[in-house]
Length: 155
Image 1 (tube, rainbow, N blue to C red):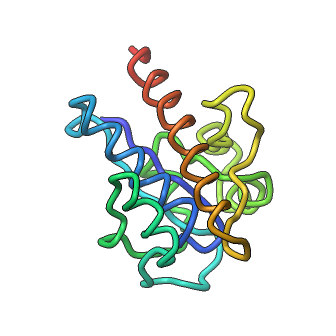
Image 2 (cartoon, helix red, strand yellow):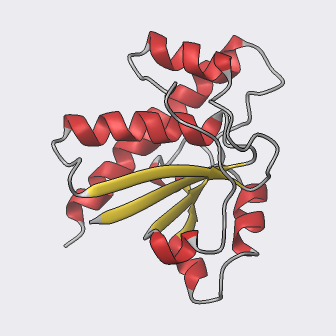
Image 3 (cartoon, rainbow, N blue to C red):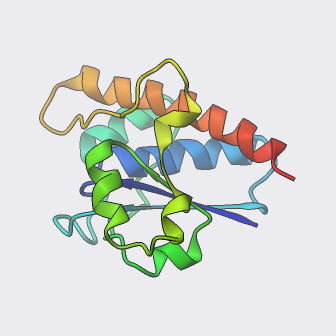
């Protein structure tokens, strides 16, 4: 079993989108019994809240359902539970790293490393328009496919 955690700031836009998209990709590949997926935020702004309605709507238009997800805050125990902790940007990577021991930091990476050539960050769409939510989906689909490929190659 490989355990993957996606991390953004409030856990209502980017990381739940990554969780929902990657879960669908994993299920389509027939690997749902082998990969556990979750998401969390580095801040406690929205704990217990569902994903942003705009994230849900744009995801639904592509066939992803996010409505059952609820925001939670990243905790130090996540570094024990998860094999890969994937941050959406450098700021959240740095914030997450503060909770990890030096040895655990190797599990923490930028999610976009799995989509070479598309940049290093999944930009936060919260204060923008519809195009930002579509861009998040584009980037998350690409990085998710790259992550799935990498996990399949892992012994």
